[in-house]
Every structure is written in C-alpha cells, then in structure tokens.
Image 1 (cartoon, rainbow, N blue to C red):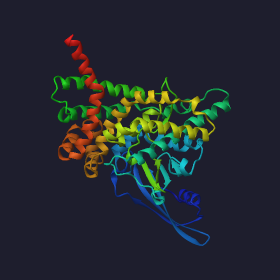
Image 2 (image 1 turned 120 degrees about the vertical axis):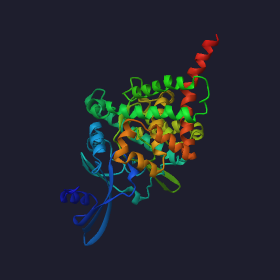
Image 3 (image 1 turned 90 degrees about the horizontal axis):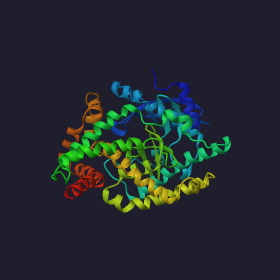
Image 4 (image 1 turned 90 degrees about the vertical axis):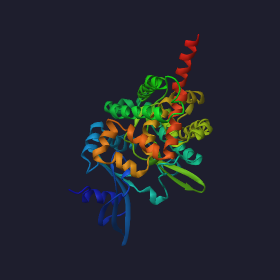
Length: 416
C-alpha cells in the first residue's frame, strides 16, 4: 500500500503552484535519530506548470512503519492524534503569519497518521547539532518565536471571547488533547530513577553524609511538582505550550546577521503556564554558566516580543500579564524546566550512534523508555567526558536548588 495516493500528491503539488504531476518518490532519512516519536521521510515530486518542469522537495512525518512497539506506544499515548488535532484543527484558527512573525513550517497535507510540510532547509534553515547548546543569538531567536507562538493562543482566546460575549479558553474545546497522558508516568519514572542513580555516581556532593537518602527523599517530590505544573494554572493565564523545545525541534536561519527560529513537532503540547515552555527551552539548550548570565535578559525579551505580538493582534499585554507576574511565574516554573531537562538531556546529548543503539533498536527501546536506562547513561558518561560534564552540571544544579536546602534545614534543626 502506498504511503500517499495520487490525489494527495496532486493536492500537495497544487499548493506548491503546480498542476501536472509527472512522477514522485519517497526517500528515507539517513539519520534515524532525527525524531523519536515518528518516522521522517523526504517527498520528491516532479511536476509541470506552464511548460516548466520543476522538482519539489518536501518533508513527511508519519507513524513508524517498521517498529511495532513504537507504533503501539505512540498510539497508546495518542501523540499523533494530539498533533493532528493541533495542526489540522486548532492552529488553522490562529492567524496565518509569515516573515518574522512565522513560528512553524507551512503544512501542506494533514492526516491522522501523516503530515507533509514544506522543507524549510531549502530556505536556509538548519537544525542545531543535538550535542551543542545554543549561542545567545540563537536562543534569543528561539525565545522570540516562543513568544509569537504563545501570543497566537492568547489572541485567539481574546477574539473568541469578544465574539461570544464571555471569557473563552482553548481548554473548553481541546482539553482532551492538551493534557499529559497518564501512561507517560512510566517513562518519567524511568528517567527520574536514572537521574538519582547518576548523581550517586558523579555528583560532586556524593560524599556528603546521607546524600543518597536525601536524593531518594527529595528528588521524587520535584517530579511530582512538575506533573502538577503541567495542568492548567489557577494562578496565571494559560496558553498552548510546546513543552519539547530541544534542538531537534528548532530550526534556525541567519539572515542579515539575525537569526529566526521555527518550531516543529507538536505531539506533546499542553495547556498551562507559558513559563513552562520558557524554562524548559532555556534548560534544554544552555550551559549552566549561560543560564546564569542570560536568563533574566531572556525573560525580559520574551515579555517585549509577547507585548508586540499581542498588540499586532489587537490585544493589550497588560490585560494578560505584567512583568512582575512573568518573573514570578518563571521562578515557579524552574522545577519543571530543570526536571524536564533532566529527563530529555541525557538522551539528546548522547552521540547519534549510542542513541540509535539504545532508543531506536526495537529490542532495547522499550526497556530504555519504560524500565531502566541508568546503566546506559552512566556507562556513556564514563566514556564521554563532554556528556558527563553536561549532565553533572545540570543534575547538580537540581541538587543545589532543591536537595541541599533540605539537608541544611534538617542539619540546622538537629543542631538546635
């Protein structure tokens, strides 16, 4: 059975400005690790219009065709259904923006099991290397795109509220697709256990008295708090958040000395405080020293871009957030950003060969996702100093922010 039929190919070609399809083909991506929750392919269409023959190169994302366990896992968690609903139903309600306001690639065909997009690499966009952190200019561009994305949800809600004559929230119509599937708890528990095991081996605090006991006591509570934050906030205005903005889901283009970012892969979206997106974007893609130097500036920049985008859409940012509220919400979101990064970074910072061996081999992927990955992470860290350093500084920041204060508090009480 063909992945795409003739009618679908003709429809895609027509959107690209061509009426007569001569032939077409599907090609595999050589890099299997480009995405974990789907299969990625190239679509090449040879088409004719006004006597001119052209080659159209497009990008296809579909359900995995040759990995039964991963297909069942994605179906069980409804990740494709979620992205289909966002791309096919909700996002078309947002304003169709271009130029510097654009925040995602153009979608040419959407099915519940397959999406066809423009190939933005042909426009000069590139995917940052997965083992690198972003430069300030690159993450600033990503923060700007994040603000544009969030602004569209807020503008849509404000416009709909005016139409209905009452407050409207996206959650009313899309709650089934904007919450965390219960069964991801197994994946999160696997990652959480790996963090604790890793710290017991590599943390600079591992020799402190009762360190292991405090890890086991405090760290699980952080992941519980993160789960609560993934629900719609009762304190702050909520938006549709991407939640997975690491390098494989960000495309960057530099033009006239400035970067512009686009986001892809909306399979894990949520409806919650926008600061969960900002904190996780920062923790995924920066070193600790860069976070310390840049975070306040990036929060201010987010607010500035959000204000301009809302104004562009006829909404006053003062009716949504003020700067103090944004800063407060960000501080509360750090526990999400750092724990989410602790789950994702150990996977994305691996070499491609090791990631493919562990997470793309049907025989090992299920175990690594749902049972244990501690041995693999610790083993790779022992072999790769760069990997060990990146994880240790991230995990030890978690220790310093959340574990050591508990240790010191208990010590003070005992000494008194």
